[in-house]
Image 1: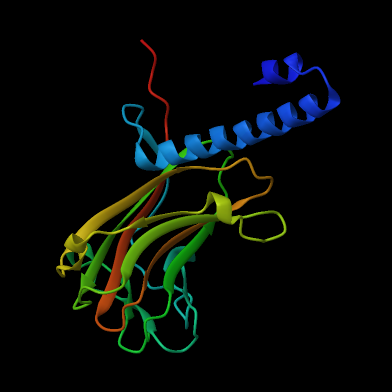
Image 2: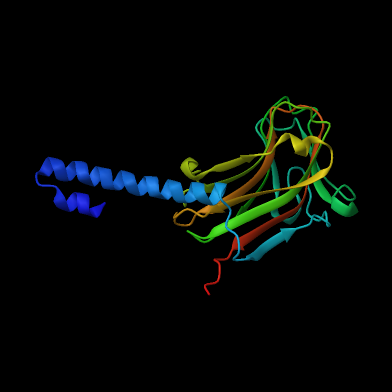
Length: 217
């Protein structure tokens, strides 16, 4: 696209060409992030950054969950988050939230983490949705806060879970993403519901990994 600018003759043409060039750069970035989300990279392996198994309930108090996770709800004091010792996969611990008093509001288990710009990451966890019905949404989401702690919405990604996760069994869900080129950005991982006001949501085995590029032959 730099060639377009070079071929411009008049100041007005150069201005339009530069605007077109900048717009195309934004489009290219959007395509790159979208492709990482919709077309997961395979073959390069992964480097685990953390695995939270929630087997230890140390530090749980109010909305503070184990291993750096926090529970957040749009209207405080309605839903009931907790760490339950034997509620997880294979009888391990898990973080849970009872949704009876949620009144269809937005609920999140969330954790912040420092990642490296332009690297590809994959977050996965196991969730169990019991007696939640068919309405509302269950999702996994990533967003970022800039150095001023403001959310940069244009890079946020949300992956909605299908109806199969509502059968009361444990299911693995995952989302792949690229860390955007933001200085001092903080990644926010989120697992939550919206529009559900009954049943229980549980989360276990939350894992963040860096996706490694495929080795060249």
